[in-house]
Amino acid sequence: MTAGMTGGAGRSGLLPLVAALGGVRVMCLGDIMLDRFVYGAVERISPEAPIPVLRVDRETSMLGGAGNVVRNLVALGARARLAAVVGDDDAAHQVRALLDGQEGLCHGLVLDRLRRTSIKTRYLAANQQLMRADEETTAPLADGMRSSLLEAAETLIKDSNALILSDYGKGVAGDDIVPAVLSLAERAGIPAVVDPKGKDYRKYRGAAVITPNRAELAEASGRPVATLAEVETAARDLRARHGFGAVVATLGQDGMVIVGSDVVESGGPGAGGAARHFKAERREVFDVSGAGDTVVATIAAALATGASLDAAAELANVAAGIVVGKVGTAVAYASEIEDALRQRDLSRAEAKVAGLGPAVDRIAVWRRQGARIGFTNGCFDLLHPGHVSLLAQARRACDRLVVGLNSDASVARLKGPERPIQSEAARAAVLASLASVDLVVIFDEDTPLRLLEALRPDVLVKGADYRLEQVVGADLVQGYGGRVALATIEPGYSTTATIARIAT
Image (cartoon, rainbow, N blue to C red; front, side, top):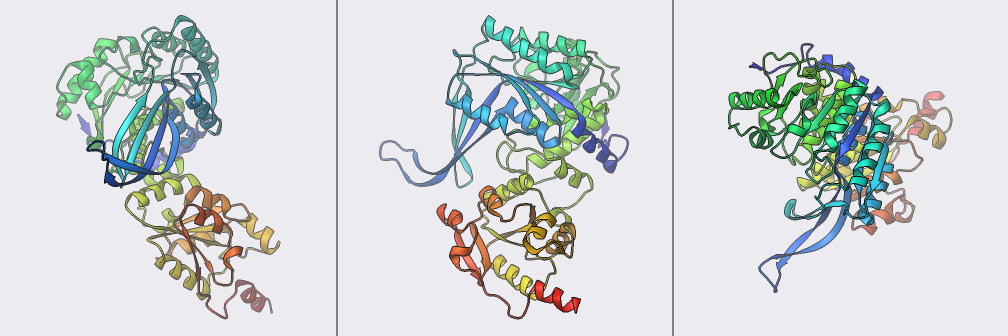
């Protein structure tokens, strides 16, 4: 077995592949669900039974199952297509709204009035999951629903470059649906990547790639999988038995093992060859939820560009390493993968500058570590001692400081066409080099209100030259229990005055 593979071109050689993901279209068919998270605090035991009483603080909902697969595709920059089934209920309305919020996503949801939309509700306190409640229908689809789903799949696959089957065992990816959809992929000449479920993989026969985890591989092959050698044997047996192009076994902290052809042909068993082992990315693990969705999405999107399976698998390995360092059913953004491929440590200044999506994910990790999140904002055109003092005071008020930075267009609107003096990239780099700053997020609006709504800092800091009622977002932050702090202003410093002195 070949160990520690790099795809033949080195890590930096995968960067063009990340860029190419933005030009592909990937269709996903499978079990969609709504992931709900209920957060709160446990302060007492119920008098009715020896169980904790959760005082609920907030709830969030996001796409799960096949929905999380398309979330990952969108985060990678790919154009996603989704064929799935929902019930006639409130959860289905939420699912539709969340799908409509995904950029570049086309979906063909089939309404089945006899089914419930699958919901997984997780209850959490002090960063620990107390329990999970599932609401679902797992029966096979009725004849009419199968026809409608296949019709939607046939429409969506026409302009797709790859197919994903996301089987969560809820009855949508049934024994009669899967072979028909795989046949559509074969006729279209595109690779089909399957995230499987259950003991019998006959329905997946002919798939280009199948991605079982260790437990799923053991269940389907009936073989031990404790060692890498045993994983390879089980994967070879499964591939030979069902004619898969390749088996990519995902092994958590042990990385991945690939058995099968490096260059995957649609619907074919491939040419075999040595098994390859990709070591796991060394990251602190917070939550493995949804890592399998990230792997299957990244492999399919990479294969859709024409990349080799080894390159696709290594990219997926990097993406999975990013996702397990986040909280909940998270995604890996293309920009984060690029940073990882360049081997940028998160403590380096360049990696402190992030878009809104990665910033939300990183803050979720910090919160799970118990950190208080602070926020301040400004143009920071020419950094002077007054700015340094403000940022130092803001950092003392929290554990992690996020700085919202006005974009070049925003500064021009606020300060006039001659500003800014320095570009947003230069200003962000200077801010990120300060020890007091943990994260910089550039925003294009005139005010940081949208950032505040998304990031929900615990402390909002502005200079004392503002009155509390003048601070944008003060009512929002105070409304959810945060606080507003006014920092002392260092006298005698002003960017505008400095520029005026230079001009004279």
